[in-house]
Length: 391
Ligand SMILES: Cc1cc2nc3c(=O)[nH]c(=O)nc-3n(C[C@H](O)[C@H](O)[C@H](O)COP(=O)(O)OP(=O)(O)OC[C@H]3O[C@@H](n4cnc5c(N)ncnc54)[C@H](O)[C@@H]3O)c2cc1C
Image (cartoon, rainbow, N blue to C red; front, top):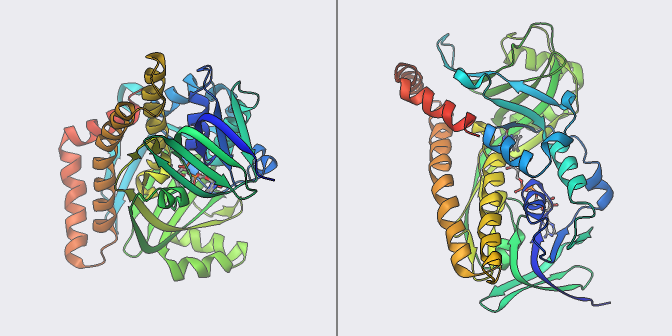
């Protein structure tokens, strides 16, 4: 049966970006519809997906403002004291210490953050949840936006916000082009237990034929994120636990001693996404739908969180001035602010990935030189530290 719903804002996608945006609108008096393909039960208890999110101080400040941070059990929050970048067989390391902040950030599992965000929006006044429903058609123009769901429900809104992943079907339906770049590499992520201490230090090691990130967790565990050509990761995804543990022990050069598998393993084919526009008439893209970063610099979630906060700020300002929540000036402010924040990070991350996955000898020399120059220039370390620890 076809249902007609009118609302102020329709959000597509209840991932971290969509849920945080819905939560940012709490208390605004706006009628908001949130559409998500997954069922309510899957959203209430999301399965572990292998992603450990390195949250910056700014992200934690946003999560605090949204009331999410206190909902995360202390046992699920691991301190990230410092970070280290190493290249190939060189023993040289570029270290990022926390300075006066005391720590660089925190590590929290993606599924725990999603569960807390989902719990926080339950019963939120003005918010209607359409779960287990997929958007099959969407359009927006200066008069407003319309979406149709797979059960025939039709939703009309003054603003449509797409938060439906880096592959964003809604972005395509809106006619917004994006550069999607498959990298022919995949990342395998899992937790391991070990006997040697990690000292709450994250290590990003660009080996000769692999990239390994070691993210320190509680209970003497570490999250391993191993990036290899897609075919090599596919083989590792199939092998039994003991073989994988032995392979990870070897590939981490026994830095943490003998590794034991402590979770399921998850594979992510690496694809970056950059939308040519973040807004259109009465519509906006947030989260990975706007910018899908390579995970190596651990910024996608953080960027999505700050982007939704900026959009919410602009929308709420328009509403306070008795303007349409989808008013063009509000959307342009979001476009300009988010693009300025995202573009340098996106470009720097992609340049880093190109340099550190290039097997040619000249590139190996260049990346060692980049690390050594970075270590000698106090501004580089201080700049990155300040970006991570700014609240
Ligand atoms: C291995 C890995 C590690 C990472 N580590 C970090 C890190 O340390 N720090 C960091 O900042 N970032 C990290 N990231 C990036 C981060 O996970 C993403 O940026 C973030 O999850 C994106 O959130 P999102 O809400 O935009 O999209 P998603 O989480 O992709 O959610 C999109 C939602 O939209 C729904 N959807 C899609 N299509 C439709 C439709 N047609 N109708 C209805 N619903 C739909 C989907 O079901 C989904 O729930 C990592 C990523 C990976 C892969």
